[in-house]
Amino acid sequence: MRYASMKNRVLIVYTGGTIGMVQDESGSLHPFALDRIIDAVPQLKHCRYDIDSVTLDNIIDSSNMTPSLWVDIAEIIEREYDKYDGFVVLHGTDTMAYTASALSFMFKNLAKPIVLTGSQLPLGMLRSDGRENIICALEVASGRLAQVPEVCIFFESHLYRGNRSTKISAENFDAFETYNYPSLARAGINITFKEHLLLPMPAEPLRVLKRFDTRVAILKLFPGITEAVVTSVLNAPGLQGVVIETYGSGNAPTDAWFINALDEAIRRGIIVLNVTQCKAGAVKMRQYAASCDLDRIGVVGAGDITIEAAITKLMYLLGNYPDNKDHVRLRLSQSIRGEITE
Ligand code: ASP
Image (cartoon, rainbow, N blue to C red; front, side):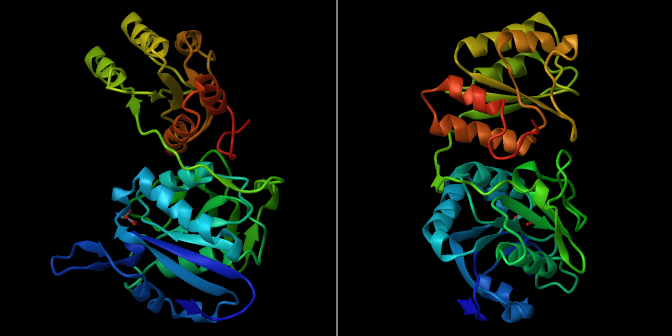
């Protein structure tokens, strides 16, 4: 499908989500075909760039997103990379931050914008936030306003770094936030970029790394967590890595059973990553005595990374560097696509 005609070109990759859903007789929302979406935004015919679109084989509620669908999305973009100035991925909001993080890691040396967007109300509804989101995402992806060599999320007047983003509201149009990094641009009368916050243009050619190891877990701590729960997660068959969601600046219980369970898992080669439960701020190992043991036994501190970026980065590194755990550990502690403040 092709609309308008001028110089720059944007490819829309439609994956599903509320933006394209219609209500059935019972009132439940189901994904629907892309043509209907474009019909709902007639303004797109007046864009000053060409828009093409492709749809995933099965359009989904993003609760059904998987690493193999991340690869499908990445392969579409990789295949069309040279033909377009940028890409818009229409995606459900529920797991958008995970997909944005995963894509950011997969696309090494990305030189063009990949902008994910969606909406809280379907495009077909009168008060839908989808029209504004899709138009602004296209404007950014067209490359006519600024060079944006990164994976982003556009939502309700802000452009965010994808791997810094978190969905914060199941209700408000303002559904995303990047607590540990400012937004990259703001859409008012103009779309104003904070260019100094964008990733630099890469010097090397694009590489797309497509492996994910899903033998990972997230273990969220809470006062009262039992040894049975902790050890059952750490002894899950085949487990390669676990993110522990700790308190505050990376603190955890100092009970011997807890530290010994982690220590024993690390000795078995399992990578343990420390991410804070706090929405803002960073893990600082050894700031408190309550993180000294974690540091001593080899838990990796992940700074101010989000949980979405942490788990996708862990899967990505384990998948692509399976024989080099030292490399995986090192890269987990560093920023590889702007996901950690250094
Ligand atoms: N459940 C929907 C999805 O993530 C929610 C949305 O798109 O806003 O696909």
